[in-house]
Image (cartoon, rainbow, N blue to C red; front, top):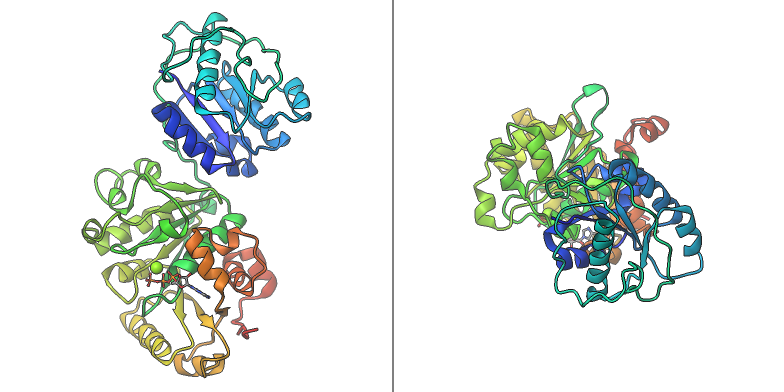
Length: 442
Ligand SMILES: Nc1ncnc2c1ncn2[C@@H]1O[C@H](COP(=O)(O)OP(=O)(O)OP(=O)(O)O)[C@@H](O)[C@H]1O
Ligand SMILES: [Mg+2]
């Protein structure tokens, strides 16, 4: 079998290669290169691969580090740079053992043809004795030079391949996830995001917190969609998850952390995701105890476990709160939602499951509702820690599936969301002190 690794900073290109090459392709998200090529490659399982497509949109530094790490792991790998044919490429090609350059806009036939030629060339060079791969219907080859079919590229010199390739099992993307866990084997912080009523912004806050904390602690954050029926974390992150919550609470995963890890989805911003179930009926089979167990398992692996919940205090939210170190509780500037929050806090206190750390967030803050932060505080009896202004940028970001904090936005809502992140960043918190601070709506 043939194996092609694609390392790019373009989800579109990854998806295109997956469509074109099917099971033969394993993708590595280029965003991970920010944490080092080695960490990026830890996403790959298996010990061999034949060809790597590097790009599009990799920097020179990205590519250079990546090539070194790739060849250390797969000494016989054929390397194709996916890049427009700018003058700067000459330097790349002279500095790195790249065999071919492929335009990102080269059509499917050209890609398939190039991969076929690379493979043929590697075999000819004595690198492999397996069968030639079937990458699809290739046009007859008239030229044995691997670069000859590449549009928009100069003819490049081929580097000699190294030792022979061996046949090995297929690469499985994300089969071996390396996580950066909580320090000194301590349990991670479990942050439950709850609200008495629906639509107050739980998913918005949970997903933005995941993005923000992943900057503080890359690969140490997981977000769990515990809204078992109508969870929309994956939608808010524009993520197509291969495995969802029900997969992770049944079978081997609850007993085997290694199996559980293979079910997690990874987001390009550097955190992991337990996506909600595909439909309400399947989700409904997940029990509160199962979610509680999953959250505890994840707290043994990750520094931060963020749990988005369904509105109200159903069995799933209660199970999460039982093992949570932190609760982010939400209200808006409306009387029903403020009263709802007061009752929610009182109920949790009566049940003895109000987490030790509470973070009160007032969302959709504005100056036209007739209430102000002091009114809200007087009713709920605790200070409001962060007020997020009503902002069309938030609604837009939800619709685009890109959290505001992933966009480098200067919107006042992004500032407020960052204030929530800072509450969990111990270095920043030490500087600021742990005292509650009321944030006045701008
Ligand atoms: N500060 C804000 N300004 C404007 N729109 C917002 C703000 N916060 C959230 N929204 C929007 O409100 C909608 C509901 O938000 P979200 O899905 O986060 O709420 P939720 O509490 O998770 O809802 P549910 O209870 O249904 O799960 C989304 O379209 C989101 O973009
Ligand atoms: Mg939600």
